[in-house]
Image 1 (tube, rainbow, N blue to C red):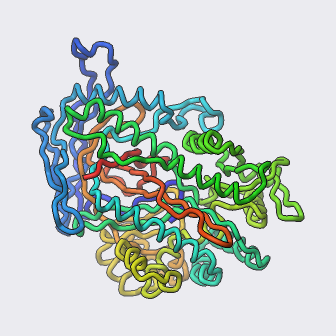
Image 2: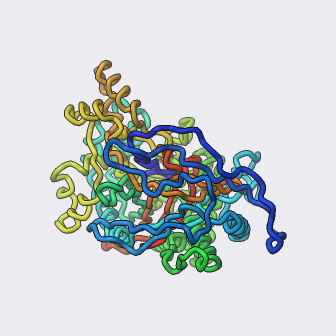
Image 3: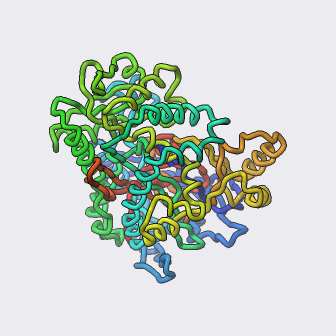
Length: 562
C-alpha cells in the first residue's frame, strides 16, 4: 500500500528455468520503397526469458518459441476465461507479427509520444529532473494494450468507493493505527517517525474536518483461480494520473490507424480521464477550504524525472478551475514555511489550501531533520493534506494485513455486501507471528512474498530469499519480524508483448498489473466525492519481480476489454 511506484507482488510462475536470451532480430531493417521516409526503429524480437513452467500447474500460455516471423494472419486466437469460468470474446495472442508493421507502429508511437507530452526526464541527462524541457525522453510504454476481462474491470471500479470509505474510517481510529503498528514501530525507524507525528496530532486533539484522498488500488489477475486479487492501496503519491491517460490515448490512436490490420477495435480501450478527475477533486477541496487567495502546494522531490506527469495535473487544475499550484520540496517548506496563530500554513508568504504529496513515502525522502520538521508543520496546520498522516498510515502494508484478519472489516464498515466485496478480492496476508504460515513459507517460499513497510519498488523479498530471511529472523529471535508481512504470491497470465523503452521496441513475455484510481473528499457534514477516476496499467517482463515504472521495472500500458 501507498507509494508512487507500487511493487508488483508476484510475477512469473514459481519454478522457472532461465535460458540464454536469443535475439530473433537485432539489426536495422531496410525500409521498403513505400516507407522510405520512416527511419528505422531498432526491433528486438527475442525468445522468452524463462520457460515459465510451474510446479503448481501454471503452464505456459501460447509460447512464442519460433524463430520465424510469420504474418499476422497466422496469429492465434485464444479465449480468456473469466472468474465465473465462462469464455470471453476472442483476443489476438500474437504468435508472430509482421516486422514492417511493428516498425511503422513503433515509429508512429514515438512521434505521438513526443507531440503529446508522454515524456519523462532522461536520467542520463544532467538537470533533466530539475529543469522542465531539459533532457526529455518518451515514457516507457507497451506498443499495444493488454487484454483484460471486462467483468473484472467493472468489479474493480465498483469496489473503489468501498476502499475509499474504509481508508477514511480507519484514519479516524487513532488507537487502531497506533496499536496495529506498535511492534513495527520498535524495529522500523521510518514507521516510528510517522507514528510520532501522528501521536503529536492526536495530542493536539486536532480533527481533519476536510479530508481528501487520491488513491490507487493495485490488482493482478491470478491465472489459476481467475480471481482479480488486490495487491495494495496507495494512499500517498499515487503516480501517473497524467501519463496513464496519454497511454490510453496513444493506443486508441494506433488502433484507429492499424486496428483493421490487427483485428482490434479502438473502442474496446476504456476511457481514461484520471488527470481531470483528480484535478476536479483538488479543486473541490480548494473550494472547501474557502480562501480564494490560497494555492494548492505539490510537495515534490528535489530531483523529479516524473515531473511531467505532475505538471499535467497542475495544468488541468489551472485550465479547468483557475486554481494555482506551486511546487515545493520538503526542505524548501522547512525553510519558507510558517504557521499562523489561526492555523493557516504559509510557504514563501503564500497561503496553502491543499497540500498534495508526490514525495514523502520513503526514508530517502527525509535525509535530514529539516524534512521531518516540514512534515510536522504541515500536519499541524489547517491546510487540507492529501494524504494526512492518518491516511498515510492507513495505507501501510501492516494495516492492510490487519484489515484482512477475520472480523476486522466489521469494525469499520456496516454494509455486509461491501465487506464481502473487499474480502473477495483480498489476497492472502499474514503477520510473521503466525508460526504455521511462517513454517509453510519456509517450506514453499516460491508461493509467498515477504514485504517490509516500504514503498517505491525494489523492496520486496522473493523466492529462496524469503526462506533465508525467515530462518535468519528465527535464529536471531528479536522483534525484527514485526517489520515485515507475508503475502500470497500471485501468478498472472504471461503473454508476449511489445515493449518500447529508449526508442527501442523489443518483444518479451510479460505480465500486467491493474491500478484503479479513486478520489474521496468529505467535510464534517457530508461526503462530496467518492468514486473511481480511471486506471493505470503497468506491464513488465515476467522474469522481473518488481513492478514500478519510475523505478525502471515496468512500462506504461492500457487495457483492451474482452
